[in-house]
Image 1 (tube, helix red, strand yellow):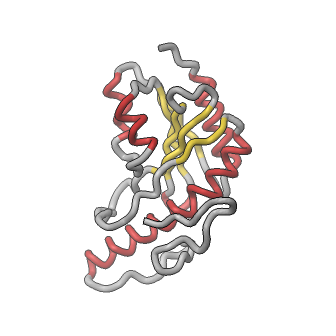
Image 2 (image 1 turned 30 degrees about the vertical axis):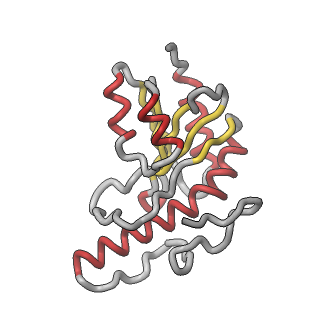
Length: 174
């Protein structure tokens, strides 16, 4: 399979430029199948993106790095030309308490960066920020035995549920 690095690379860079806050894009081309797992094993998703990573050979991917340690994984959507999958990546270091934290899961987005950024901002980032807040709180509590203070700049989302359903979508209930 031939990959055109400029397609995914350009899409990821354009997506990063349109997300809220300061985001950077890092494109990676894979010369061997095993190389796709350098980032893929950090994907915080047990749904569609996890399936795509485990079932397909990915010739490339991109990592977006944003504010407050947020990281996103971007790949072409298998079997859907012109679409992409965007998923959160687990925090890099210092957080080990993922038990009991729902995966924020990734989403499929169109190839138009402005539309994709709107979908990521509305549907993915709130779930991701909530999961990061819970993991940070649980990790701090486990280290100190004391509840963690409020995380600065975190989105307040109430008792484990999003503040409200994303517009046009049913509430996320597990």
